[in-house]
Length: 465
Image (cartoon, rainbow, N blue to C red):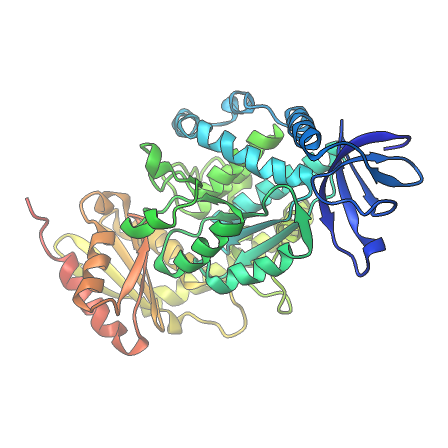
């Protein structure tokens, strides 16, 4: 911003020396400059000229001015009316669920935008599957758009998680990123599609002391989660919805809300990737391509580097790259399905076919794709096409098993309750979670065969009246 103006120093990004520190200044817009003149502190009112920056005005004056100017900038970016602007892009069921969550979404949007505008550091963590990546890529596009129109230099770290836990180690890693900056607003940790589990308790508890946490999820939370539940936790289960409204779709709605952009393609790719009842495999051809490519990209390793939403976006934004990657991923999945059909062991429980596949017989030795979870979803769809809807698929590998149920079976068999009972019977040696149609089980590799045998017994139990 040229000439002389007054504003509030909202954040300082530390350089190698004091003269290299970069200041974010909030006035009628956002501006940046190196620290020079007076040694100002975060929260000071400053007068900035082409030559220098000096402290001007009281802290009380600065606090009032900051709230006023920040609010004005955010209103110029985002409007709570955006939820109505996007309504025509969603089918009635999806929109109805989104509107129920709009108050929470608006509150969380203000938290993220306050950090983005003021220069506070932000970490976005997303699960490494098509659902989590759909949401993260939608958010990446929204943030990139906002920063371009508002002249913002974002301080964001995008991190793909290969686990579904926000561990204490994850928090300490994020904290190192936060320590490079001081800001009026708290740092933000945004978590997409992790579920809730005991492995996250310490990480969330410690992060909650120092950060604002935004958590977008669609898994059924466990009972004890309330003790570490973030204020900005949004889950369709709390709004008369269920896991079919995926975390990636929720993040896409969030991204549209803050930017006003049309990002509905990522809502659709998220539904398809997670085999949601909202998915349209027949008509949403482009979304199906993106879903397959996101599943593939988040499964494979790029010379040991994590896959970022920016990299993902560069692939899917190129028609040539998208088509090439899609064809390659489809071929790999087709080969895996053929191997699975050769290796499957089918058991009958009444009219239900339970198909068990040892993933060791599927691994091709030269690709990370598909992972067991993606493979089990594809196999379930294949078995349903061959045998009808009375189908359950279990894919196991080492200490992990992935379970998929048809929608019809999930309405009469509570798979999460069965997994919980396995845990109770083993004193916690068996654990798991997920959705009513897609769940996972963890047990020691030595006990996996015994665990699956007991699961089969539980699946054969008649539901209590």
